[in-house]
Image 1 (cartoon, rainbow, N blue to C red):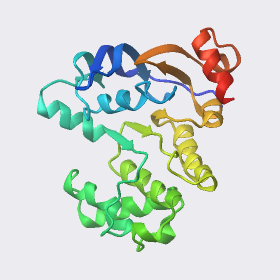
Image 2 (cartoon, rainbow, N blue to C red; image 1 turned 30 degrees about the vertical axis):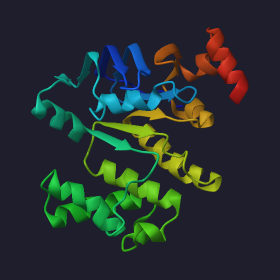
Image 3 (cartoon, one colour; image 1 turned 180 degrees about the vertical axis):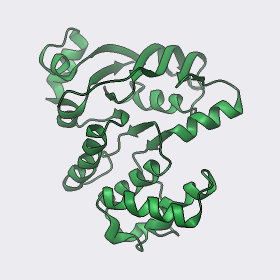
Image 4 (cartoon, rainbow, N blue to C red; image 1 turned 180 degrees about the horizontal axis):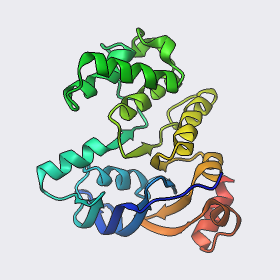
Amino acid sequence: MAEKKLGDYIINVKNIFKTFPNGVKALCDFSTNIRRAEVVVVIGPSGSGKSTFLRCLNGLEEIDSGEIIFDGIPLDDNKKNRLKIRREMGMVFQLFNLFPHLTVLQNVMLAQQLVRKSSARVAKSVSMELLEKVGIDDKVDSYPSQLSGGQQQRVAIARALAMKPKVMLFDEATSALDPEMIGEVLDVMKTLAKEGMTMICVTHELGFAQEVSDWVIFMDEGKIIEGGTAEHFFNNPQEERTKLFLSQIL
């Protein structure tokens, strides 16, 4: 990946713990910092806490203890703080979560009008620009059921981008797609990375991680086992657990 300049820290995560009611410890003394324009890829076995980490970042899951600060704003019990953080973090899930009764264009316009209070004219203009960006502007009047999985996920990305977030979270964004559709979604994510979007991506797509990431985090049992640049991580991992994981999937 071409050299790019990373900014100051936009996310600070310090010593967070998360245990679910069933006793599963999802995050254990988890700490990391993420810079503006940085692309962080999070990998690890199923159940290692990757998705929980993302969901804690924007308050979809409550942490038991520790500290999350986003762009100087603490994620705490203050409802205004939580709302500010939610507005600035776009999230794309494994399942597309589009409204089936709305067209592609209406899906992308809706939150702009409800949350950002944009006029219909502005929301439509922004939506059309983003749908063109993700290569699906020819489907504006289609409904989700008329789209492939890859097309639906690109609409979901456009919808998240329409809120003009400072950070994009991708939670296994390609894992529900047929193999031939994965590339079209990854291409959109690569474009965002090159444009300087701050991104945290939970993914099993290791080729994407090697090509795009500035930093790779390997998680297991709710902890960061190892972190490093893609070159370090894939070519010279230090931890035995990391080596074992990579030997099984590469």
